[in-house]
Length: 180
Image (cartoon, rainbow, N blue to C red; front, side):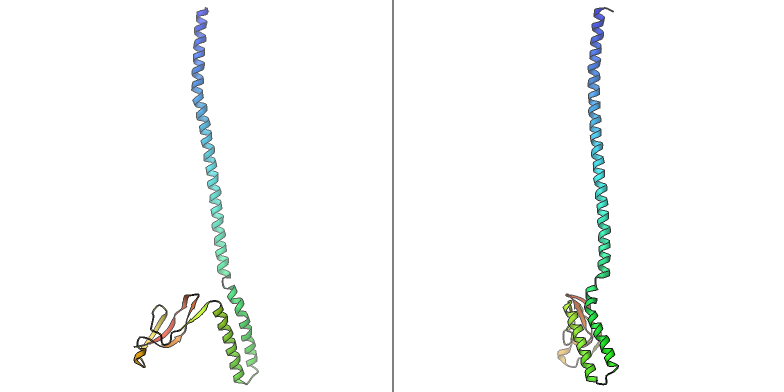
């Protein structure tokens, strides 16, 4: 081979090497970007799975807490009513042996007042109905009767069952008779 031919081959080899370097540079760059994007996707997928698992655990935990709360919601009330139940049992035992009606009546009144004050302390309130104007939001009309006087027309004449509210929410409507 001549010197001129060697120079031509060397130039072509140099040119081909430069072209190959230019062609492989974008491929390497694309591969690194692809690897970087795959890593970001894997990271995002991992974060998603962890967040989903955390939310699922939260949902299960709050459902369990809600069930526990429902099952034990009245525990405080029952604990406060147990001494009153004990008083009733003592009164029943005492009633079997006594002949004094006044003592029995006094004992029942004491237990009634204790129960009433206990429930009042827990937020239970009686609704006053007798003589009040009929209100369908708090009263349940059982029947109408002729009013004994003109001032009782449209008002509650008699109360068959008392109405009660618990912390401002009506839990039982008063069953009343209305004068017309």
